[in-house]
Length: 55
Image (cartoon, rainbow, N blue to C red; front, side, top):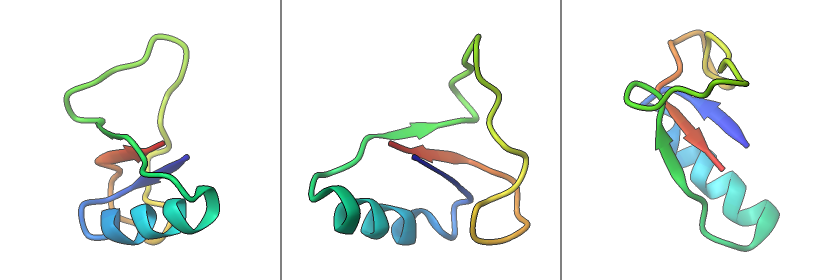
């Protein structure tokens, strides 16, 4: 699972595919809220705000 900004979504998808050998699902965190989980504030690759969950 990767929480990333718009700029790094392709990198997260490539990393996911390399690791799991399967296509990930993308969740737009600007449109979706989870009741039992809060996403991190910053991208895993930089300091930009998180926009997507790659899972």
